[in-house]
Image (tube, rainbow, N blue to C red; front, side, top):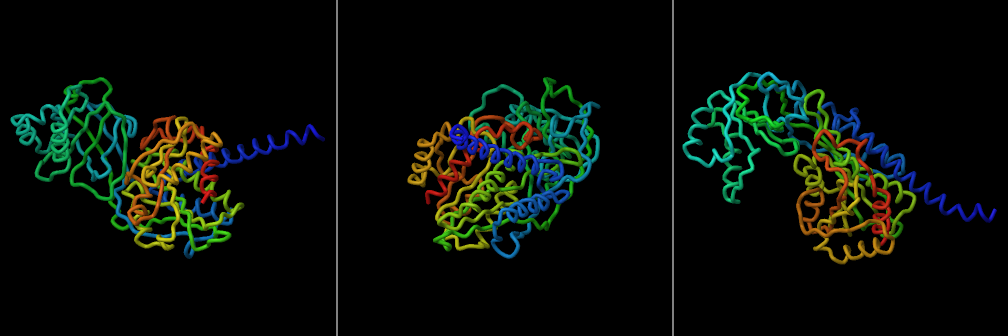
Length: 426
């Protein structure tokens, strides 16, 4: 009996580790599966994801913040529900892997002659006039694969000219092609442009060898689409009217056409997994202060869900003791980065001390202010806040390769244990 009892603590720790990582992997796998259509606004992907998160809150006894967990709001978004097809000189390109459609592009179906230009051409006034004169009804290709060195001022001017070629109505090109050797990274748009743009990944072929393109893009602009934040609460044991707020956005990029899905495993199914994992823990271990859990929609459209919450808050923002926003929580081999750590130095030092005492993560790296995630609008309302993301591991981001099966979740359990200890320290 004595030998068995010695092994019980070890068995208990292994069991807790297994439960934590398996639950997190389940959440990531579920939310990044085809059923959720990339958690955006085609095929009600956002609504399916919201319902899943709500039911997880219900399962663990989290109470709704408000009437029924959901805080609805209206967005505008450009979507691609139909065909996404493109071929260069008769060679069919694969959406997501070989090319991307600009997220603001309208519907276009036609065949175009291609006029190719380099970035250096854009700085030449005579060539620029040629671009303008040859644009009528054709496709303009801008080749970004050169190895030329440009000054900062030249790069700024090049970017301005490219944006004019892409979007300005006075230029009559029907299509702009950005030819690049950089990683294809997509986004979504709250507006629809007048002209179409695609980005094509170079495969060692000279851009000037391409003379024609055939394209079929079906776009649909949703002017008033109702999406929702999901908000829950665990009441504190002592200070019910003071709040710790934990957040993560659950939306992603959705689909580009009927077949091409952007799963968003790391961005940000992993952050939702952290949020839900912490809700499970604190439901069983209620803290001194009330904890509010918010899964935001429309972060990828410009932090719209968190902005809406701060304008129509369900709690008094001035009673928030601290907010922690989780994004990209699926790696961690090189530790985590903490935005706003240079602002809230006392809390950052406490976080580092907890980590040092327990050896949870390899590193906790500081970063200053950065309005790049859902903590931003709270911070602007003087809410003390951190935004955290993991470092190292896979590089898939805003692409078709951000999948559950390749996301390592290497330090997820240690990261979540660090968060439990840090949150409990308030």
